[in-house]
Length: 346
Image (cartoon, rainbow, N blue to C red):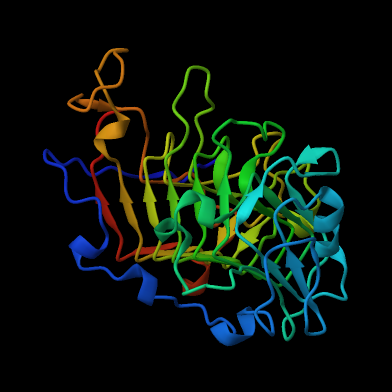
């Protein structure tokens, strides 16, 4: 098998400011994928976040409040509801299908997508990384499985205690097309922070922050963003990954790669596979802080260390499959307008 491997390693002797704005970027104002106007991402009548979860004041709205059980989150798969507004709170300990985290199996349509969005009656539109931890809406994990056409807006995913050991990623999108993750905060992930897998076609991660993998003895080394195709054991209709866009995110202190594109690790490559087609990685900032530095040769963490407990900013192990002859320009991987700094030897 021919493996396309593209490693981006930029080594700087001095640390640059750990702020996108200091580098002249304004990530929060550079949303490329159009969203429904923000007014429609608020429930009618500004309902309270106290009490039990339940329908909102407008047909199709559902308010998820702190203390919600797995049965409350089951409404996420009730096609009667289009907008789910999640109040500030800790939504850990939710189980679906025997796994920790929220499971989404019912989607919308191209013309009528469904929404999961942060909501507070006093909401001023702040992104989750600008809110205090107790003001965020935080889940341990959310999985989209065969659920097309969703927008997730300003949700936080975090698993600092590494409870979600049975899930691949904090936010996992598999066999689900047109899923837009906008203004997401994913931090202290047990596994990969965000994964787009096997026919998560035309999905987008934009204007988000992914950061700070858990560093502890026996902690799993994972990527902030994983892009995964199938293999010959995967049904042909979900083998490939097409049209994924990673746009204007801040990605830092990942224990493996900032982004890794690869194939499923079991089985041989099938003759019908076409790999990653039309991947776009544009306008992102990737960096390591001194929190990830270590003494070389097996030493411990050290802010002045010459090595890093991390790998690459971008690691493209696979693009368009080599068996695809004459791929079009739109099928090729595009990496453009990104910034990298703070990386050192692994």
